Amino acid sequence: MSFLEAIISQTFLQHALLAGVLAGIGCGVMGTYVVVKRINFLAGGIAHSVLAGMGIAYFLGGSPVMGAIVSALTAALIIGWIKLRWREGEDTIIAAVWSVGMAIGIIFIAKTPGYSVDLMSYLFGNILMISSGELYVMLILDAILMVVVAVFYKQFLIVCFDEEFARLRGVNVELFYLVLLCLVALTVVLLIQVVGLILVIALLTLPAAIAARYQKSLKNIMMLAMVLGIFFSCAGIVVSYEPDLPAGATIILIAGISYIIASISSRAFMRRKPAKS
Image 1 (cartoon, rainbow, N blue to C red):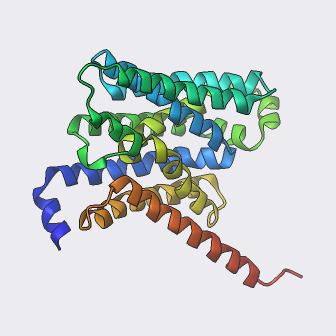
Image 2 (tube, rainbow, N blue to C red):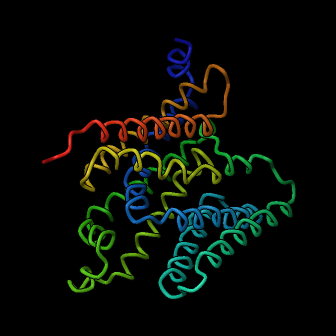
Image 3 (cartoon, rainbow, N blue to C red):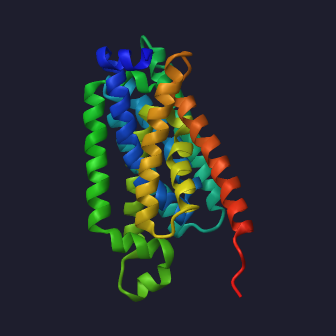
C-alpha cells in the first residue's frame, strides 16, 4: 500500500516505471537476437566500451547519454569489423577493446574538474533518478529499434539462422550484421540507465533466454521476452522500494532467479514428456 500511495504522488517513481517499460521493450526485441545469434560476448564488449564516450562527454561538459550513444555505435562497428575480418584471436582483441573503453572512461572521469560521483550511477544503474528528458531519449531509441526491426525483420531472421543461405539469396550479410550490432548498441544505452553497465548484459539476455525455453518462433520469443523484461523491471522497482534496496540489482536478482526456475522447470518437463514411438 505504501508503494501504491507513493507512486500516485511521487514523480520519480512514475518515471522509473515508465523507464522499466521502455527498457523491457528494447531488451525483449534485441535480447532475442543476442541470444539466438549467440553474440553475448560481443554485446558485453559494446556495453563496457560505452564508458569511454560517457567519460569524454562528461569531461567536455556534454551529455553522458549522447556520449554513450556515439561510443556504443563506434564500438559496435569496430567489434563487428573485428568479428568479420579478424578471425584469429578475435576474443582477445574484443576483450582489449572492452578494457580500453572502460580505461578511457575512467581516466576522463577522474580528470573532470569538480567530478560528481553521480556518474557512477551509470556503472550500477539508478532508475529512480531518470529525468523526463532521459525518458524521451529512451522512447526515441525504442522507436528506432522497432522501426528498423520491422522493416528488416526477414533479413535479420535469415542472417541469424543461416548466413550461407542468406548469401545465396543475395542478402548483404555483413551489412545487416553490423546494423544488428548497432541496434544492440542502442539497446545497451537504453538499459544502462536502468541497471548500469555492469548488469546490462543480464537484463539484455535473461528475458530472451527464458522466453526461448517456451517459444520456438522468433516473433513469439520477442513478445514473451518483452513481457518478461517489463515485468522484471517493474517488479524490481516495487520489491526494492520498501527495504530501500538498489533497484537495478533487484531487477537482475529477480530476472536471475526466474531464469534458474525456468531452466529447472523446463528440464523437468522435458524428462516427463513421453517419448514418441
